[in-house]
Length: 294
Image (cartoon, rainbow, N blue to C red):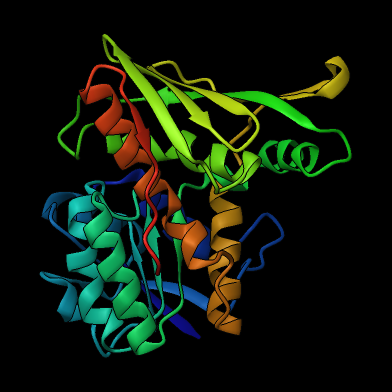
């Protein structure tokens, strides 16, 4: 049995993951009988208490370290990415596998340090947005990998620019990671403009560009891949089953010890969004996407 602790009860993801792991499915069977959430903690005691009481968990932790010795894996769902490295450290040094929600970290420096510690202690890590696991994202990615040459693309997803959890990077990973999953992780440079609370981005690859529209409060997930000869593939992205898919990936990682993504893919959105922020802060300057060796 993999005993799981969650840090970040203020995020609806905490309750969603706990319900999936701890509640039988329609057939009366547990979806992952070898996984169970047993502890909850984080910076919002009242929200943590709600999850603790609702699911009858074993531990309501005052601090992350309280979970050591009780859990075999941890899911960090805290909304503000600036706390993710701090929360991860006690478990990384003990070799405990992690899921880290979006944003993986709020800064490139924290992402580099998280990877360094995980590699030093041999800890598998997964996470980021669940949107990248949606079937429509997979279908768009298949079109990019198909026989016809890609001429460009467009991706749209919601944004919450004004929030107490890090501003732009709180919600932007949904679009950034889905777009990278579809079109590839080798973006060369970005040009971004902020218009009111929306952000428009041109992400340049070697021989095509992708437009990303981060639309504040507009809950539409959609993508289009434009191919040679006037062909295109367009999908609305249904995210209703993404939590289950994320739980499945995490359970598989716990069983096998193998990460579902390369380190470069897991961290890519952190460096990408850092470049985007620099670009729109400079009024639309073109900024190189710099990814350090990990």
